Image (cartoon, rainbow, N blue to C red; front, side, top):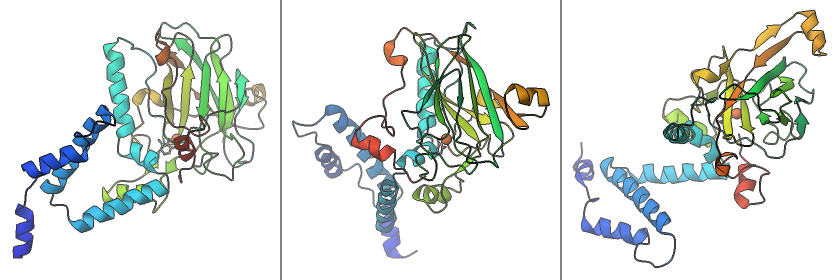
Length: 331
Ligand code: MBD
Ligand code: FE
């Protein structure tokens, strides 16, 4: 070890008055304007990072290559992809679960993360929808159905079931411009018995693009960027808590090894292959298909703000700048 390295490793300045006073100024505490919450959060964030730099003796090279990586993540609109990869989305779910438990809103189908690939404004249908445009003939036909109920078992007629999923190559319409508009994206209003049915195709898993900034971060951690085959849901009905969830198809090698940490035991559903000609004819299909059954139980709430999805920049949801960016992720 050279003398120079030795010196670097013993320098600790974080707790000095100079650094602490400096942090107060950087966070704007001596300024009248701005938001108190923004100042407090930025002060904590910067303090933690300054201390980390001190504790780990972060080098100039490490610091500036990180700035460069953050620029790359932003350039490719990938923070929404890195976020679940670093567990933030699941962590927020864990907090919401704890809030629900405290409020005794229990017994419903578990939530799991929304992910970055929802697009608002999908075509609406009553009871049944065909979701795919038929352009993926190699893909296996999926018959996806279930019943929406209250936690006491009462069917919820007219519940809104929004479903979105990727194609057999792991790509989502809109983000993949080669697909038709709203391919594999539909809003289905449950029938009088709370049932919804969709004809679609079995999605494949998803992988973070090789070499993308998110992949660079995951590789540095020795991790992969794979998700199992999954189907996203938003489910809502008056007087009930809005549910954001997903199902994972059983048997995928990544079902319990999801880079986005969205798998929950109760949300793993088998795709059952059906070859019985009578069943095929009943559904007006041409051949064998895979049936996926997912029933959904919603908890009751009178709180209006819990009956709708939380605000978040989403593709096509608002005209806001962030929303435009939400729709441009290179995934
Ligand atoms: C997906 O399809 C997804 O659902 C998440 C959470 C991240 C990347 C791709
Ligand atoms: Fe997804």
